Image (cartoon, rainbow, N blue to C red):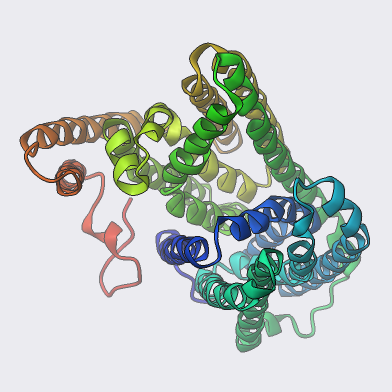
Length: 514
């Protein structure tokens, strides 16, 4: 079986994620322009609850499936690969259908009492149709990830997003004359059609990949044998994700209240929180195109190395993932710190959002490291560890917000988030060291990032001053481009990155960088 390297597999997912983000950004702009903020608001009111239900319905099974598949592929246990996929598919189909049926019966009560606007009912009912589809699709994606076949996953994501955007916009505009609630239902219907398209592509690729899963023909394996390992891995994943979702919900409820305790009105608190969550964090999430891809790619890559007992390969992959995370996220941290207000002003016409963005810049590397280390620990099967580190970081996050926001305003909330992310990332790194013996060497992970980061910081500051007469947009772009190029040249000169790192796909004669 030919699989992409960890760099190439992650790169494919990065490109897909980047394209999806561009489509999503354009989609939101068009929806607000043609349907209005009210219709988007009704849709967005339902979506977080839908996401939480999906976390429970999938129960962490896709991650567990990817890990078990990778291990069994590495050991040539084809019958067990086949059986764990069948068990996962059966469970996810049943859980998706059950969740939809239960919520279908509870819909009148939930939409009438839980949501602030009962007009979400139509969008809520339509969105329920996507639950079983997403659950089934997640089984195929977990299977592909286990084989380290990232291109099918990326292709399904892009097609799903394209259908969602085009169908959602068309149906939303078409149904708008029947009321804003029906327009929101049209947006939800676009999401359902997108998920159906993603599932169709996944099933098509699965059938085309018969040479892989037909290797199990003639090898008997009982489904019962897989229930215990699948459950043991899946439940902590689900609990960690649900805990993270609950922490984010509590954070969203707590910050506006504590801002009022700081001394602003309800309206002012809502505005400040909107700048923090809707603008500052939107920018902070940009580098997650890289870390999300890495987290997905690391699960099967680490599980495979551990299954065959190749700890040298395991440590090499840990090193690659953490190195890519730090080296790619550091320029964003520097840019967000130096140019927080100009970026927020030019992109969102809201320079006030630069206040929390500047503070979040100090801790954003920990946010990105947290995501990458979670992928590595999932590959190691350390799901309970992830649960506890997530809870520990979340508690510190909430305590920081609770005590610091009334004293420092939104700056205190951002500091609380930084402290929580730093604790989780450090605990994850300590767990990784304990489980594998991996260590962050000084030269690669401290010295060269500090040297390159200092070079970029000084270069960006100097260019910003020298280009004072230029228009704001060109001044910002040239400062970022020039200092970013200096950052790359320093790392290239130090030998920490090589031209081979920029090859996204296999190329004759090149080898993966260290």
